[in-house]
Image (tube, rainbow, N blue to C red; front, side, top):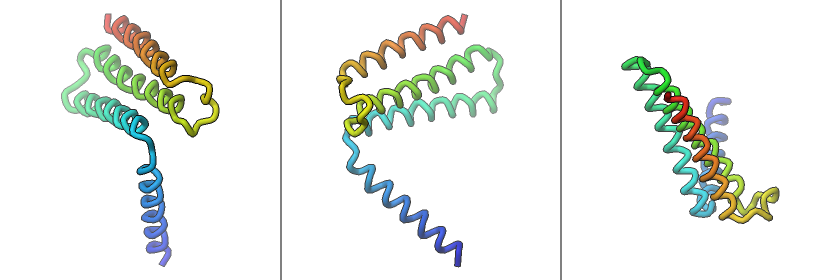
Length: 116
């Protein structure tokens, strides 16, 4: 009995999350898609390293850290651009995007420097 109750609770949770996400603005959905792409790319690199090997280990680290760093910066952008977030209500979306681009430039300069 407890198992079917847990299953029903999980289904209700999934449906409520899905219905809440449908009302999310399109620009936030695009950022979410970008974050998923960055994380998926990092997972593919880890799987490739596990299957083939990690001979140029600096390259592997650079690729994975670049993907994860970009995903983290995109999550920060999503938090700043979200209209429902009251902490950043005075921050213009253009300013948040400029911060995102500048931080990505710094991140990738560090990554390129790490490659040697």
